[in-house]
Amino acid sequence: MIKLDKKDKKILHQLDINSRQSNSQIAKKVGLSEQVVGYRIKRLVDLGVIDKFITFLNPARIGYTHFKAYMRLQNLSPQIENKLINSIINHPYSFWVVSCRGRWDIIASFFAEDVKRFGKMFRELLDEFDQYIAQRDVVAVEEAPSFTRGYLMPDIERKELEYGGIPEIWQLKKEEIAILDLMSQKSRISLLEIAKKLKISSESVRQKIKKLENEKIIQGYGLLLNFKNVGYELYLVSITLNKLDEQTWNKLTHFARQNKNILFMPKCIGSHDVDFEIEVKNFDEFNQIMADFRTQFNVLVRDFESNTIVKVHKFDYFPMGKELLKQV
Image (cartoon, rainbow, N blue to C red; front, side, top):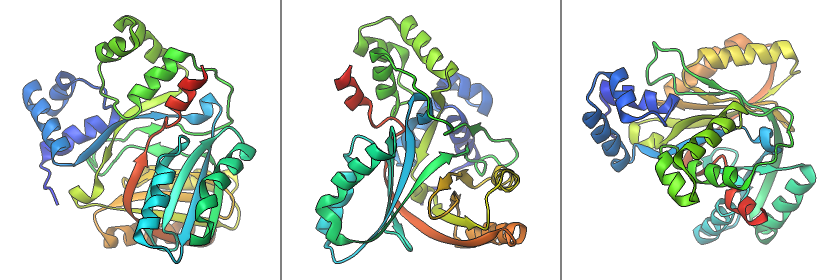
């Protein structure tokens, strides 16, 4: 485990709320020089604390729905399991792929334009591995409030991002697709570097990014932490309610907003109603959060289950970028 001092946490907090901030902007907010901020960010990357700088998109704004697939495996060797995981990672429409311990062994999220397209891609993807999958489940995500890591700086209000909603038909232009493709896993890439790759001016790049932000396609810029390297654990809790009406949803979102460790809260259509993605120091901290949850929602909850996420294989809000570029 890598020890983080207060200045490291302040820098990570600033990158978490907006990773496109310059070193000089961050320096003013954390009370360090620009050079020291640059050194510390590089050190955090080199040590494996920061895995990637990512761009958060709302896929519904460009016509995509989020589907989550849960898989329990059977009778397979480590080699076959790696082959299955790699086939999901390499799929152009998978954006979140994790290995778990609990009821499920693999959870993967995909973007698709509709249920029929998702069904086709999911069946094709898993056709080779059907004999190794003991159980599977799929839910569609209706919406999902997303939050920055409040536990880094508990006294500062955290940022909330919009995700989901009714899919819209927003036709991205070729240069917009290329920009999103470049920025999805490198949110700190400079305007100049993007401009050189696309052979357009930096000002044109700036305007196009601003347009994508104004249209709420780009929701923000953050980072993917290697939670194990900073001594944290990641849990996914799937909750089934007696009913999920607007009043209950509002109470649940209020609970998530107040809890500094809940990062993502998908509202699901399928076998369960809500997921909580929770980063905590240890199981005791997780258990306390769930005890608080049970105290507040005991009457409303029919059932819930938790899975420990042991490895994040892929996290990319625009995995289909290169595929879309072939089509324009």
